[in-house]
Image 1: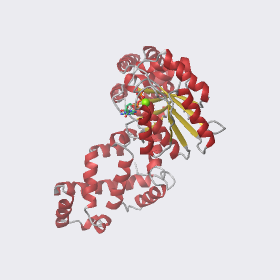
Image 2: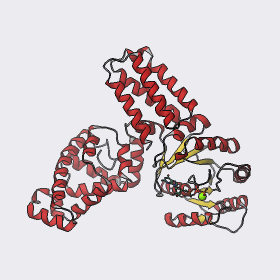
Image 3: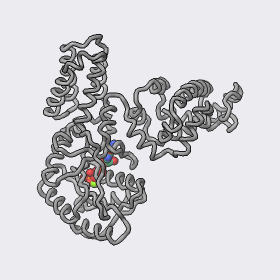
Image 4: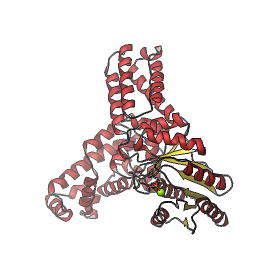
Length: 443
Ligand SMILES: Nc1nc2c(ncn2[C@@H]2O[C@H](COP(=O)(O)OP(=O)(O)OP(=O)(O)O)[C@@H](O)[C@H]2O)c(=O)[nH]1
Ligand SMILES: [Mg+2]
């Protein structure tokens, strides 16, 4: 996520930390580099200017230069100011006191409105809500059908009715929501290549008719400043309450993410991180800032883990770790849970750079390898998984054959497992039994 910008900022700050003593000129150089990195990431020039001047003013402050670890201090300032850019306050989704809450999703053509409608409905359902969806995109053939297909996939109801008037459709859907037990109505709307007067009028009329609790702009992070400009235009007509920044999984440079709050005053509430329906994350300003600086995003990781990990299981696992009973069976289960968390690269990106991460990196686990590892472990007998020591040469051969992997891979897995067992036991012991149960796998 925002890989390029992230790499550059981390390098600049690492260089700065590498200096024994930091003088004003070091800071000047670093600030110039940060400015270039941000501009290259397509961050709005005014945002860059203000950001750099704030960081510089603070970094040149006496207390920093006299500090024992001035480099570290500058990192903290950059982190702090990044959080400020995203808006320090977490912007939660609002719900209306009287049911139903109405969420209107607007945005340019192809920004991800329809997909996000489905993702958000699923997210809300997991939180215990009963959402209903409706598409008012009567302009594009098959647009309504697209939402119905999503609805079928995620098993969430969609309101369908004949008619070619978007405002009428929205009203009828709201009436239906009021008459039934749904507590949230999500309204997917039509997009345009550019925001034009006709679309704005249509959206304003829908908003007037349904009085939305949230008006979320769905913006494509890959389009950088265009996304910011469209946000400004939509905000002028519609009074946006939040932004969902989609396609953050791609090679978005960061321009949209870092400028949108400052330029429009509208906070990012969610980010889309993939095409799957589960690929939606609550936006945590601090988490994102520290992710960019390579410090991980434990908050988002906990969100994810809570969704897929069974808490009782996690508690058991922690106990096992503390007692040094981490078996191959457990290892296999951990891998399964890890894979359920999403693409490995995204998950690793959220881990703080503690010593352990280096360990994980060294192992160079990629997605395919995970599948192979699981295959190898599944070819073992339960007895073997419970006590790895009995896995001698002939058993290794049999396991290799069963899993279709070479014996050398079986050997490597066993070596890694032993290493990991040692490492994890150490980490497990360093957490109190209350410390980590929410985090399904031991990081
Ligand atoms: N990689 C990635 N793709 C996404 C994300 N969100 C949406 N997409 C993809 O973007 C494309 C457009 O998504 P739609 O949901 O159809 O966009 P829309 O805003 O409804 O488009 P219109 O209705 O034509 O205006 C689809 O191929 C989605 O799968 C995301 O977070 N990551
Ligand atoms: Mg659509």
